[in-house]
Image (cartoon, rainbow, N blue to C red; front, side, top):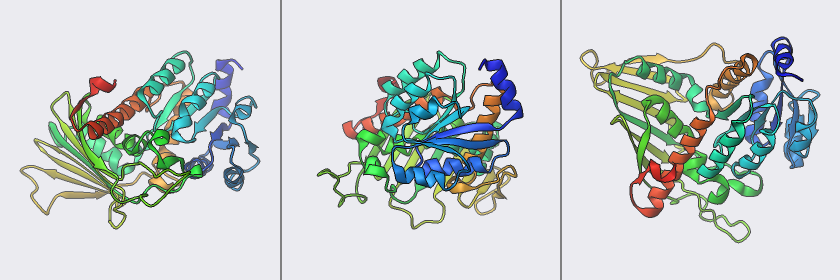
Length: 365
């Protein structure tokens, strides 16, 4: 079908999704799409039968495939969501990018900088949208914090701190996420979200990364095929930016005994803005107007959200923007360069930990 006729059909008919990988996060995407007017999941693919069964239970009349390549050739979908294990992204993307289908690939884009670059080269040869699923920027309090920083509420941003204190990694099929070789490492797999937020909020190029981290608590007594998991469960990561701002990531994956899982704090010469999740709270303190204990406070929501899911409505809002870009032919809001940079910062952080030194971003890019 020619692009013009395809676009005309999308503007007037259901936007048809195919989901590749129907484990926990694949099901999460399906549930979000099920709540979007004008969109539906018409096909899904997963080699693991129990995962296909999970998708079948929540889709109406969708076709199931054991091999995603058969789905790509079926003519049943307009766009695909890739939700496969991290280390498979590069190969699945290579097949999808050989089609004219739009694609949203879950984070991380790939597990290495080289694979990210390979994917970018393949995507440059086509017109369809290629979008990276870095949905944390869509969480309502985070989106509001980004807006407040951009409009000058804190003045000249100097410091940004992101804390995630959460539960350990969940079990996955074949336990793939227990090993760095499959996930890219915790600071790529999990924390690419936060490096993306740093880049969005600071609005400058990261130039140097310093990190300290270890595997101190989680998965130490687990053995798979004779191998013990090697994924980090805690870290501090400091990132220096070209404009002089600095950012800190504070990660603990054995801290589920908490109130807010994520806390983001942006401080400038005129004030401070904080976001708290899942409290869904934003606090604004302006120097000269507020003092300790009396900052302005807002509960933040987005009336467009019809399904909260496990990410506080951010995946739902991400899909709304993705569909709008596909229908209009506009540029993706979260593009491959965003995906590459968030992975590269995680790679630099792991390198800093393993070598015990600060790492220039130029070393990994």
